[in-house]
Length: 281
Figure 1 (tube, rainbow, N blue to C red):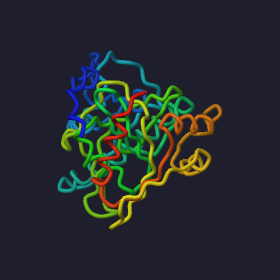
Figure 2 (cartoon, rainbow, N blue to C red; figure 1 turned 120 degrees about the horizontal axis):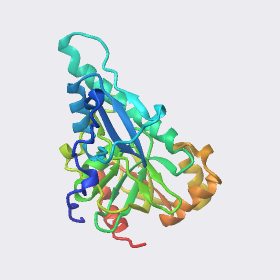
Figure 3 (cartoon, rainbow, N blue to C red; figure 1 turned 90 degrees about the vertical axis):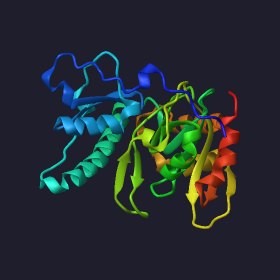
Figure 4 (cartoon, rainbow, N blue to C red; figure 1 turned 180 degrees about the vertical axis):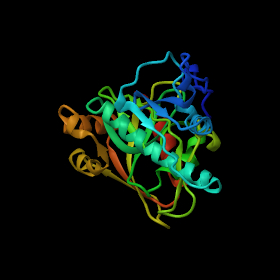
């Protein structure tokens, strides 16, 4: 596999962002999500620290900007005894991620094709492998298994601009504690050996994941029309795009087509990922 990426540039580090002298600023956390800046309002310093650790790759550390109300998300831990605060905070972190995703999608609607997908990229060239799937089909396990050798883009949402570039969404990974349908925890990418891209990522390969226990690897190419239909359930904010079907078709063409991949274990996809991330524009 491709060697692990170099440390991320300054813009992706965990350097604290400008607090601008505002008393409440130490309780706010600014993150970059799908090409926009979202602001998180936390209830206390402890929660703010937890959020910063989990979202460390996405922290915005530039000059403080004005964020409109629709890009402000309040973290709500809820009431309860001290002994269950950790559990309530874990649930609040999951809800926070969901709210941030929805807010970023609304803010960027009409600017990109949004896919319910994970993504990894070649840290030197930006060539990216985008894997589309509904929940439970293995996006996060694949990211955890193969991601440390590459650069992390998302385990949830991939945004592709008109020129084929990807807007990273460097969220914490939503890791299930047990089997399918169990509670999720938001885990910082660094805890799983994942790092941010250092170059602009672009779509080099596009697959739909179909995970089946015990399955042997099967790769099925799909023609463009059928590919558009297959991707439709896993898209967001399509109505806001000009010529949405044409935009999706362009993503498919830039990726050299769409394939449906049936598999059981993430390691089965390793050779395919290596081939895709070795591609050149």
